[in-house]
Image: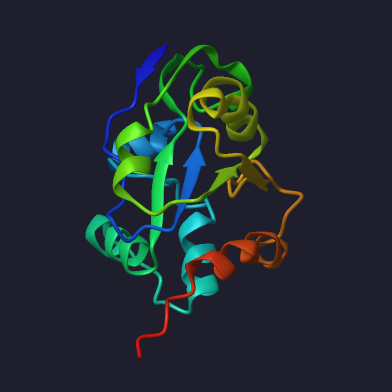
Length: 167
């Protein structure tokens, strides 16, 4: 089944990092926002790492990301995919990151899972010239990683999110 990315990225001029998945899952498309599957640990992990309340609405999720200076999108604009299986992706077409990178101060890109990393490096890195750092997938399919282990691995993002001190 061909999937075309259904929603816009989340970022503003203050975003410092960009987190990229592959393409929204079936459940995320139904929920009309990133990481919509109830067992995906992305929102729980980000809220724990940043010391914030777990967001439940799309607006709360956007607010959390923007206040913590995290940009969020996906590597792919479209692809053929079976259900939500990244391993089944065929005919991938990358999103264009030009506007995000021009408007923001993003200097570091993190990918949510190995497939997002592989696709980013193959399809996007030649244009962006910003290397990405692969982080373990927050998907419920990644049972090797407990929430605690995910948080340990993902804590690397925190050093890029520190707010500058104002005199």
